[in-house]
Length: 296
Image (tube, rainbow, N blue to C red; front, top):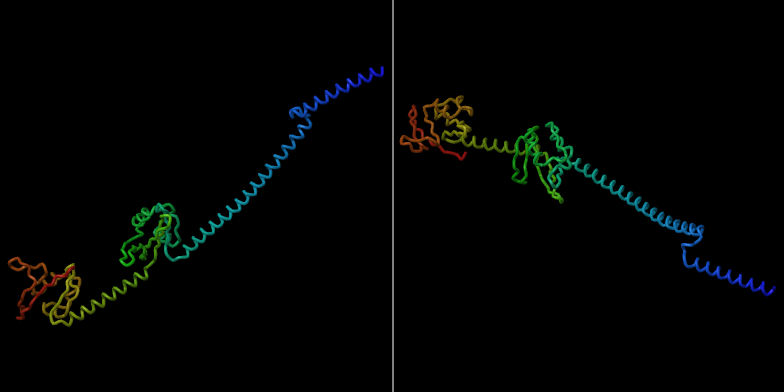
């Protein structure tokens, strides 16, 4: 009986070892047969690692975004500062300022330029083309007169309020245009005064020269009215000093005298041009009369 019991136990042990080996082999050969609690634990570990990695990536992206936002804010502040400085700069100049883009449309103006239009009840808004602006200046009566400046090659405008502005243009790098309107009224008035003084001085010298001639002389303008004459002219023609003025035409003036009127258009009896003749006055004096045409 003891031997039989030993044999039974050895057979059972052998069977158990076979089952054990089979189970170990099965577990080691396939992960799909892991126990459910262990598989869930392992999966949670993998998910936790993925979450950690993605969280780190998200934190890094957020940090980069914050840095980009700070850089963007700083760039915007720099741009706003530069724009304000530009506005302050153009407002500080005494000239009218207009900036045009590459399509020659208004981008920026200063208060000095806008004041020209405000006096005329108009306003130039951004986006207006330069051609339309020039047309409006004429149509609204803002520009009364236009002159070419021979020295600078630019244009000078006389405005409705009597002021004179000189225009200077400068191209920009992008193909746009900057136009400055400089008030030169004082310079223009000074030049006009100097010119008037020079003309007055020339007239005085011419009158003095004519007065000292032994001949009678009268200078007639393109309207047929006397500009300059001397006393000798009045005496030789027999006119009264009160009859001679710059408001009376020479033909009407000479009709009051027996002295014939001789002009560059006069002709003789044969119809030929006559620029010189002799005339015997009532008192017996013989006058030589000559006419000299002028370029104007």
